[in-house]
Image (tube, rainbow, N blue to C red):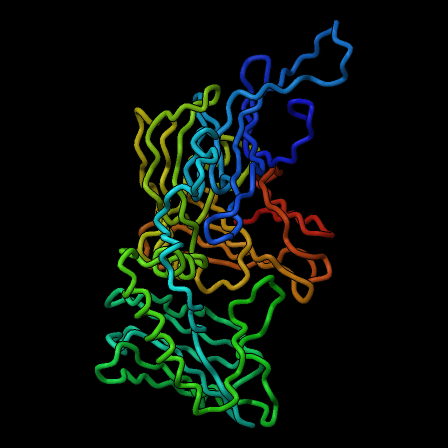
Length: 451
């Protein structure tokens, strides 16, 4: 209860200072309508101080909460750590005083240039059609893409399509399907793919010919559908095969509209959608802020945005676990680099202490990842969400320690899907060291030892 009103909030971190405890919490601040009438949500992060001792003369049954400071941004923190009188706050945005976000009659300027987007809806990422014994899938790509940059793997029940090293700014999100589950089985020996660069045209066509394992089965979609608010892979079938190839012309027209807009120096399709569509599977784009615990003042400048693959595992062992609470695994190419962050940012620097080879690459192949944590130099852990049909797995990846190979493993977290999805993970003290505690909807799973 704050200011005599109940405010739902999320606790991120806490620090005991003298006879009180200071909490860092986030809460929803406001919802606005932008110029294109889309809702824009703001969030507050606040430092709350609560006395640990009760006043013997007081008649109240609870201690008052003092708001030390409040800042506002467009997202909540992904991670926070309190040390040496300052908070390390990792988030996809920076935080400012609420007065900066007060209504000025117009929305603050951003790099997304939403108002300069073409009014037409972008075409789907692919088109497809089927016969009784086969399917054909057409994916438009920039015609300058070399065939050596296209990687296609057709398995019996999964499909992987990756395009590396973009030759030029195509203003479209390139396909990234990492072990995507197909709706039904295919005959991988009879299936194939071709790349037609379409001569001097702007877009070519990557065409996949998939032979059905079960002839006569009508597929409602290419990929197996999982329940979601807006399934981006739900592309309707093109009934007339002669119409399927028109996806290339539709994409030509859409990108022409982007380039024709004189106010779109950086088209919002590229800056606002292309990167997240690729990077959402391999990390989160975060900036690190250092704020004074009591005042909220910036102790140092925000870092540049980095692709963070793994955050420190929350635990109770402090220094005994070997997990630096200010360490992050950062994406560098296909690898994951472990950095220890500064305790006092005005004095210390970020230090590279270990490397997890090809971590970014293997994380991209995980279709159901819910959490990714690291335990210092010991391991990086990718934990699946699980569902009603299957239980979650935990994949562990270890430091190569200078060798050409590194240890890795997989563990099932509890029983089957009837125990529900994975809700949260932390570490506690066990007989042999750190024990992993995994909370599922109807089950509590302890893993010891887990690395």
